[in-house]
Length: 225
Image (cartoon, rainbow, N blue to C red; front, side):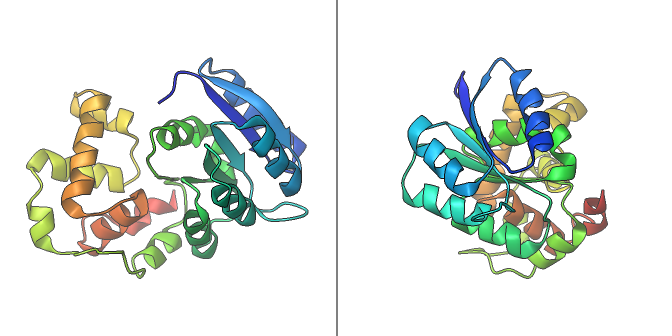
């Protein structure tokens, strides 16, 4: 992750923007370069300021955050997009990722998960908030995964430690929490995570959750929290 991350907020709720700003400004790695209350204003600011990351709400007064994501992605701007939304429906989540978003956080858990989402996004990894409802996970399980070969043989190719870390990741535990629990370094967890994704031929947290749930390795009720 870059040492200095420039961030743009696109959200039409001033109080929520203030909350995001207070979290961002407490971390010296991050610089808030701008904030917009409408989608069109946000797109103009992204084009002019060229931030590293944009935090985008879905519900805006002019165009929605998914369309913003499509336009910014199509413009090939050097930024990553993190959706922070009150909507936790599978349609919104799937559309957001298909449009080019790299992460999705529920608004009611943003204060706890925003930094983790930013850090994950800036590493180039997909981030899905573990607070998103279990109904979403159940629907994700029904989605076809590109080139996926869901089979016990793939899971069996993981080492015992990789199987343990995979289950914890699928349950929504952060790499740092896993490292503390297993008495290993966060870097070791990230290395295991990369190996797990490669061996299972999955490319996002959503696919990993779907895989684990279909094999019966996790209980989808865990995602109610």
